[in-house]
Image 1 (tube, one colour):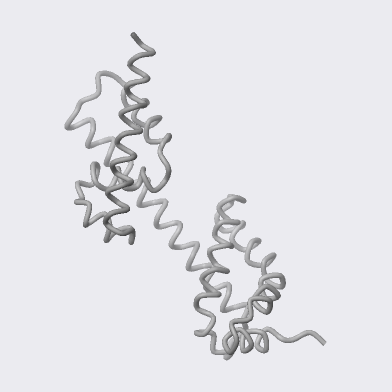
Image 2 (cartoon, helix red, strand yellow):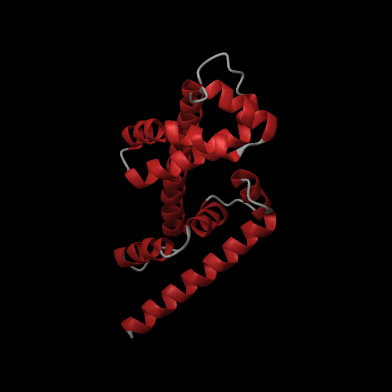
Length: 180
């Protein structure tokens, strides 16, 4: 007879048994992925959020009291991960808009092509680099403030800004050479 979800969680809490957690993942992954897929309507994002959900569940397994069902507890975590992701996406979109607006105000682009070039240059960056660049240049945050906002260590933010700035400079240099 298969162990119940409550029995498996008790085993995980007591021993850290990863096999027992694997069984919980197997039992509930379709539910979590389906729920997230319907909520965000993006298969890749839903899969990423489902993975984040199970990581968070494993980290927080000791907070499962067994008073409700494991399934509802897990769906609560999935929903929280979805909300965090949605806030992050909205925040990034707003920051990108401010960055574009800030660029137009302070360094008026030569033409609309410059705005498109900026979007293309930002698109070449890794997400972390893009976020650090946008926070520091568009939002006017210091490296420390960007570190606090993202939860990244200060040195990591500085590295992302420096790498992102270098990649954007290389992008613009290459685009300039192409035009010449």
